[in-house]
Amino acid sequence: MNIPFFDLTRQTISLQEELDSAYGRVLKSGRYIGGEEVERFEHDFAQYLGANHCVSCANGTDAIEMSLEVLGIGPGDEVILPAFGWISGKHAVQRAEAIPVFVDVEGHTGNMDVSLIEAAITPKTKAIMPTHLYGKPCAIVELRNICDKNQLYLVEDCAQAHGAEVEGRKVGNFGDLSVFSFYPTKNLGCFGDGGALVTNNGDLAESLRRLKNYGKDSAGSFTQPGRNSRLDELQAAILNVKLSYLDQWNSRRKEIASSYSTILSNNLLLDSSNSVNYQFVLNHDQREVFRSHLAKSGVSTELHYNFILNSSSEFPNAAKLSEQVMSLPVFPELTTQELSYICEQLKQI
Image (cartoon, rainbow, N blue to C red; front, side, top):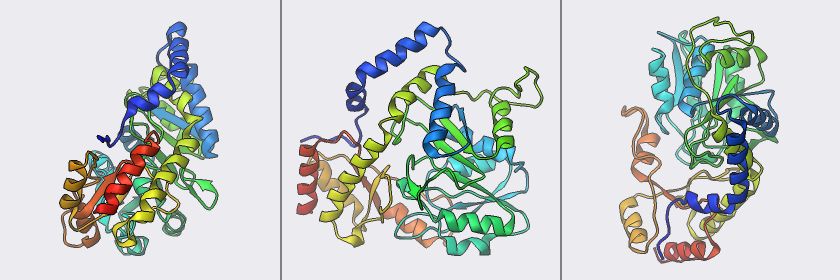
């Protein structure tokens, strides 16, 4: 068999009729920016998360940059980040002319090691920006407490964790601001780039709405320097179709992850308990041998991630993960036959 790492066409085909209807609504409306589809998505996504406000934008990286801007984080300020993960948070902090301060991650999850946070706080620290890596929530309650204790902002990166929960609350509800990406391969993805910021603070939400639209307020006045970072109507319409399936798709991802977990020994797995399994990740010191065997069997794998955000020797877990992690197919449309085949290959290895 030849099994892709991810196949977006399967999901599209399964939703073809609903998607065609959504496209038709937008085309018939003649409005492609800032219309009813965007308003509906912002309302429904906030409601799904249990949050007060959702402000959509052009992509997840813009969401991070805008969160820093409305929180007043700029030159000389420090933001604490995990030393392992995707690069957009680091770049956003640098573009704000602030200073990224890294802490190591847990070796068994890849999430920020909370025990290291307080030692990294200085008088210049303004915010902590954790990631719910691979769909597994980080220790967000503890991080919220640390931020409250030290009067710091918490910017919650939920770009890989749509629908994940902690203590009965969906992630995105713990930060002063929380950011999401709707890149096509995410658990909730559109057909291009898209992003959103979520908050329970009405003032921050209003600032974000102005910032993303050239600094324009509800009265039509340009009250501040802004940018153009808007989710378009077509992408919002696609997300409106897909949102109702998110929990179902997350459940299927968990089923696939469970099948893998029953075969593989615990020392090869990153902990995916309570995860929505954006990725299913192994931690193997013979990664390339493992990947080669699967590739010869027709099973595609990927690396998330094969780099470290800071090369200092202070981050041994991040360095080790960057050299050893590999991801197995876990997209919801993976068939039972394909899953069984992959499991057989894993047993052989």
